[in-house]
Amino acid sequence: MARSGFLIGTIARTALTLSVVVGSTALPSAFAQEAVRPEIGKPLQAASALVKTNKFKEALTKIREVDSVPNKTANETYLIESMRGSAASGAGENETIIKSFEAVVASGKAPAATQLKIVEALVGAHYRAKDYAATNKWATRYLREGGGNPQIRTLLIQSYFQAGDFTNAAKESLTDIQADEKAGRTPSEEKLQLLANSYLRQKNTNGYIATIEKLLNYYPKKSLWADVISRLQRKPGFSDRLALDVYRMQLATGNLTATNDYMEMSQLALQAGFPGEAKKIVDEGYANGALGKGAEVDRQKRLRDLVEKRVAENQKVISGGAEETAANKAKDGNALFNLGYNLFTSGQAAKGITLMEAGITKGDLKRFDDAKLRLGTALIMSGQKAKGVQVLKGVQGTDGTQDLANLWVLFAR
Image (tube, rainbow, N blue to C red):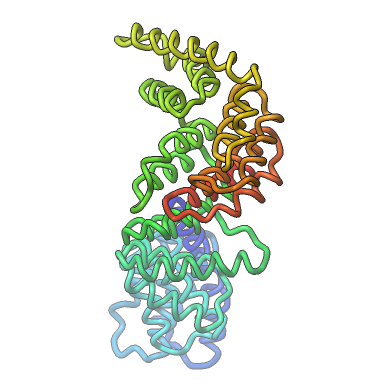
């Protein structure tokens, strides 16, 4: 939608060019083809001269002198409306542009190239008048007759959207975007935004999120990340179990800002058995001012003290080696994987990732897709983006794990 004003301005400039084309070329040729009475020809010639010097309102006044001439021929009417439409284009008189240029097209007398430009001008004029049905009519005709201005196609889609026809707006937008991608072109941000908004108005959550993911891929912005993460949590079937993973995504994209979010994320990390991660969250919260102030400063301090205590306890456990020995002896890979993630979040990234991979290889994990999601994100956060993306592409869970994995793939890019 942001681009519609620019497009209208472009169409207006095209219409302004018409005042030269019609005024300097069509009139002499039309005079030569068929006799024009002096009482019409002289005022129109004078109006043509005024148009050439950008005196559009004066030209319109001059043209009105012939309105009272009786028994006009079809050719005289065509000449009058051609010149009136041209002058109105320069003067910005939208209603007159529409009335005159529609009469010119209906006459069938305009040369093909000139008529196509007039049709182009009518698209812009009707769009400015917010007559979206007429915009569609003239835009469709322009494209059918071989018009090559891509902005007319954009106005066609815009008019669908403005008229509330979000189904056609989405359909046509998607067609353009897919054509761009097939040709190796990057779709414009405006096209993607319009498609996303069309899906949003249809309450098509899947389509909206898929389009936002494209926007994140081509035009990543913090605000877009915030929106897609928020909507992902409201997607039907998204598991509450993934709350900590959502916070991790918010943190990575710069969208963890609220005091309560820092508090809750650190508490969830503690509950999951990752005090090293909880400490990083609390430390960041104090560093950026999200924690350490306000009415709950005492509660925040108690949380910080608890985190420090758990970190110290955890350090004793992971440094002794007994937990790793037990995890290696276990029948499944759950303990080995969890120990690896614990080490990763405690600052031992290389060893942690090694144990996580060993846990997945050992198999029989309680939640295989959760494990691959966290291994993939750990690889990305440790700088091994290509390997992390490869792991994440194997996540297939329908409870939100695959959706989160897809976002991390976009983040890695």
